[in-house]
Image: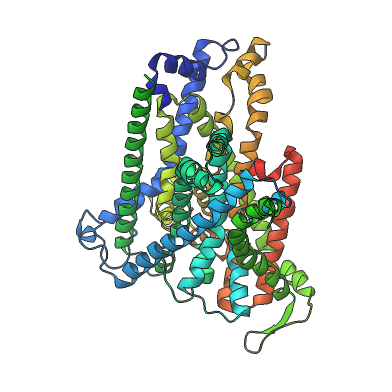
Length: 295
Length: 287
């Protein structure tokens, strides 16, 4: 985006990047190489998107019976009432609630951990660092199974609460990593300046640090929510009788996934796209305001 | 309280709640699982800790095939992700120009459609009367009575598909950081394009390759969704065994032994891989 703000300089940078070193190879060979690279990238993106197209397409399928496997004609009837199936509606509500609660907890816990890990030098820091990294490097099946084994040993019934516990446990690491990255790229001097001007540590945190890391925290929260909402593996171990959206879909594969699932998934994608669009517009507006200010 | 002790306590105050959560719901369950893996008994009468170390030997020898398959499928998928993802990341970082953020958005977007549902969509795509199979039959890659669904190929294609963004994004981050002037300097010093790529680009992209392979290989090793939806019991991986032992057969000791072995295998693997790539700080390299 910064490239657009300064057209002349931007073009120079782009040219530099677009055509790394000249010298070896002729112009024609460069073009061929460039073209092949672009073609490969398009194919890779297609690979990523074909299943998405299929899901969207089959939300309009006029299927007879439960099976939604072959294309039988266009209809909008699944879009009329995507929440018709009460089990599906309940599963979706559960997923949303679990994602909201676990994201709130994980974001709070993780942000404070990231702050301490970046801002303070203390004994045991690298141990904590490594410990936070461990859930990220464990297969989900191990995490889910271990938690279930503990709940069984302690005679705790699995259900909504245990799903939230599990989701906080494995999203907290993602939050720490994301917020840490933001903090590490931040200029410490601004905080020091605030303290030099007499602000207490708490005021500095509230008025300087928090607003500066806010985008990082927001990104971390969004990541945590997305991971929680979509998780199947860990949830399948700790869900008990509670259904979530992914569990519902997996369970439905045996009798045929209802087309309403495709509708809901498509709607979610549209919501996410909308949010991303709004985010982009805000960033553009902010960038424009900033460039006006410096002018 | 003196200012000095306060200073020392402050970071722990920040870390405390999160650390406690991880100690209770991550570390303790793992240790508990270690003890469960050494129990004997049966689902009706319950299990008792008898330090039955033979559980490990029994579990591994009984399911070595699934273990081997997990490692092979995850390894092949990781390699395929690297082959597909590297050019994509390279193009995005160096040649995409103003399309850069759009391409990144496209890489992330499929994530927001349910993972299980996308895998179900693969069932449709690869199904026996689907377009992909008839196309491959026409060009002779699949015999006329051949199929793609419920095969090794389908499971590996599914895993590769599901974890490709985990490979592409760290690769992009690493490549993006490379200063183009370094490549220019290399050619100024008469390196050919291939040499510059080999001696400059690849070494500088190593952290991305490392992070990407871990983020792909580890979840792929434990995955059972792809094998369950796109394969048959002949393609089942260790995740499928652990899940059914835990949730259907209720053989907790053996399930615990299997999942503990998987965890150990992966930890050892990470350390060896870090050694090979010469990463100094493991966590930094991976993140």
